Length: 169
Image (cartoon, rainbow, N blue to C red):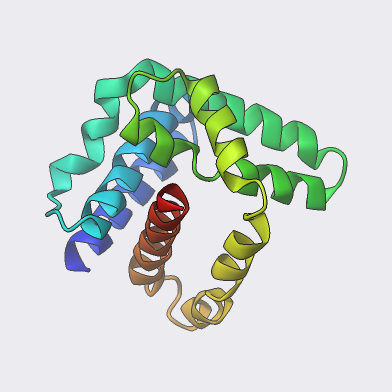
């Protein structure tokens, strides 16, 4: 978990620095997300993770960028209808980066569509999984967010395991 804490810290610092430049977040958010989630998937599959693995998403830059952009646009548009449709949209697209990691030849939109298919009938299960972490997130407030360096990787690894279970069924 120490390596994951470091990866989460580096990702947070990069994304925080980029938050001042919207274009930077837009350009680098997708490949960085792909790389970080690929690290979680690697651990679930029994592999080792190094800090430089979090940047592997840049090898598949264009599809990761397009996927990040499309997910953001669609989640935003669904959120305009109220919060609940936005949450449902995010749950539908939640497996798209894992799918892109396993199928690098897919376009960003194809990965998003496959995620929609995969999550059909499983959105509530993922919602419950995420909600089970609410206590940890509340406890993180007491540590001024430091606990998040361990909770976020734990949640992402649980989601990677959720993906593996969905893929296998």
